[in-house]
Image 1 (cartoon, rainbow, N blue to C red):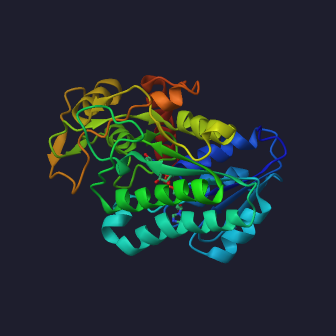
Image 2: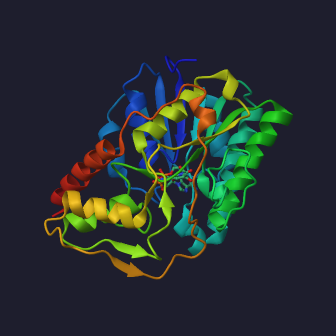
Length: 320
Ligand SMILES: NC(=O)c1ccc[n+]([C@@H]2O[C@H](COP(=O)([O-])OP(=O)(O)OC[C@H]3O[C@@H](n4cnc5c(N)ncnc54)[C@H](O)[C@@H]3O)[C@@H](O)[C@H]2O)c1
């Protein structure tokens, strides 16, 4: 399947990954991109440049609304379900987390039963797996250590069940530590963007815990490409895929790299704070399954970092 002449719904499409996906798709020969977002965790500026494009349509609404989702799925050929309540929300508002991450995909899957030809890719997370000393393949026993991981795992299970029992054309993709332009650097998650913005503004990176926790950083456009690839192949229906670049860095090494490359004062030292609740210390995936489909990340860590640094520097300048 190509995306030529397709109507594509991106739930959570005004967010970090979704807005980058919309940018990639709008350049293709698609018929329409519909972004659904309730803007609880994103700003309109992420998609402002797309609003005048006749191929783009914004729906301000909620993935938890079954009638709205049914109406949108009826109009769509492909659905990328990216709307989610993230880790920090889960700690503060567990009900919102549960409803968004479980009822949201449930609404999409139920709507698809009334339009079985619709193709769905559901965004999940490495947080469903937990930690391990060895790289974890897709079928590694999941051991989520956060409410976010629990709700996302349930969402995944719904996808696999609906694919197997009802023939719904859904694939699950698990992202791990995505970074890139438009990731909120003023929030509590997205360590690369937060460190970059601090260092560019003369502040030391703030590390929670020992800093020895490992991260598998992947540039956002590589995750977008992997997601589009899954939607374009029939053999991925009902399957789950880990996607991550090869970079494995500790938070200490990340802080050191960013200071070395971008700090005005190279003698800057990171500061340390208390460890985050339920944090995965070694959430390292085995990515052979998606590599066997021919997927390879295109961006090196350094290229992604440079693009992201330039975006943050520009954004800080525009806001001042
Ligand atoms: N960024 C990462 O490192 C990462 C890692 C693993 C998995 N993921 C997954 O990727 C997906 C996209 O994440 P992101 O980093 O772009 O996050 P994001 O918070 O930037 O985007 C999520 C979007 O969903 C919207 N949203 C939240 N609740 C909604 C609701 N009830 N109805 C409609 N819209 C709603 C938010 O406003 C936001 O625009 C999520 O499913 C997330 O779980 C992200």
